Length: 171
Image (cartoon, rainbow, N blue to C red):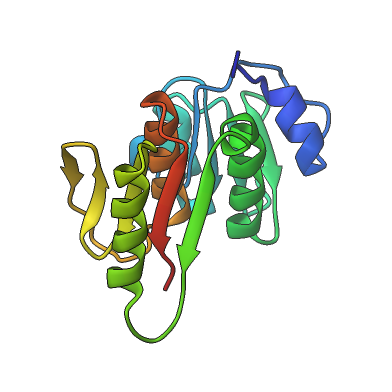
């Protein structure tokens, strides 16, 4: 039930006249592009994204193409954020995210919240300095707060594992 097509997402983002296609994913890293992906990012990599299977490309450079849906944005990070939200909104509506901010004790508090949720029988995930932890699984991460594409990968992972609570450090 979570299938989405390009026309719906592009209309949400304010673009029209597109070739409709099933969306299999969204990324800002051309190396992660697979068939039927939407690439939103730097214009210098648009041809590589196209060669890897992107059917829709939104970049900050004004380039024209008849082969694919190619659109211009003045702020690709903002467009990427909106696209990822809209593409994943049905999953997001089923997951509660608890973000912990502040100068000190973010790790301790967010991990304690995760442990408490597990203790009371709620399937949960922790995202922060200690990596991504859920059940008996641990994924190492490079940053305390993952980038937007990586964060949505973890939200999708939580959704697929019937996890409905995420406790995370926000830095």
